[in-house]
Image 1 (cartoon, one colour):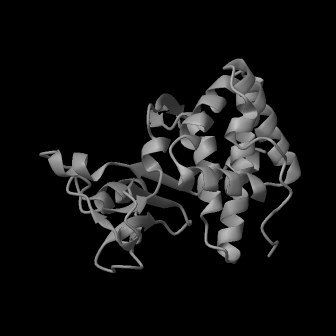
Image 2: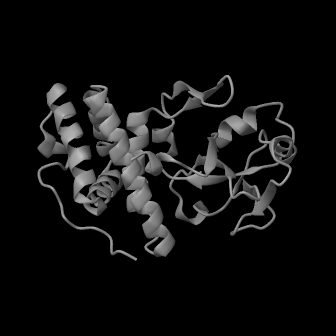
Image 3: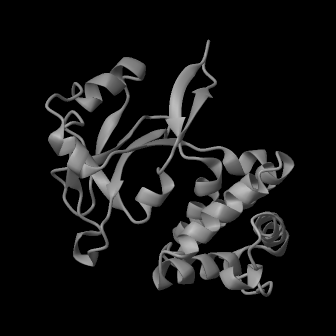
Length: 232
C-alpha cells in the first residue's frame, strides 16, 4: 500500500480565529516557497481569483492552506483571508477540527530530519473515510475518493500491526457520536470501499471496540456493505 500513501502536496491548517489574533505574520508565502523552488506560483482560487489558497511548482507539487468550515454551505467554497499567513488565504474544509485535534510529533525524512506536527494516524484514517464520502461524483472525485479509502485502509492496517486497535475505535466512536451528518458520511465511505480494504478497516475497528468494551453494532458495523462507487 506504499503507493497509496504517497502524495504530491503538503497541507497546512490554521483556525481563522487564531490567524486573526496573531499580532505578527510570516513573510509572504510565495517568497518563502521560492527559496525552496523558484518555479512555485500562486494558483488563483476558483471562487475568487483575487485570493490564493494553493501554490504549485513546475513539478506539480502543491502547497495548500486549510481552515475550518463551520458548516455554512454558502461559505464552503469561499477562500478565508488569513492575516497571519503572509498573504495567503485558506480553503475552508469540513471536519478539520476533528482531524487536527491532539496532533502528534513526527519527523519528515529529509536530510537530517525535519520536525513536524501531523494529525494522529487514527484520526487521519477516520477523516479519510468521511471526506471520501463527500467527494464530487465525477471522474476526479472518484479517483480522489478511491485514494482516500485506500489510505484509510493502509492506516488501519498499520494501527493493527502496532496493536493500536483501540485508538482507531476511539476516534471512530467520537466521530460517530457527533451527529447524523457524521454517521451518514462514515457509513457511505465504508460502503464505497473495495472489499479487501473494508475488511481491513472493519476488522481493526471491531477488535478495537471489543478492547474498549463497546458493541460494534452501535457504530454501523453490523454488516459488510457491498456498494461501491461506479468505476470510471
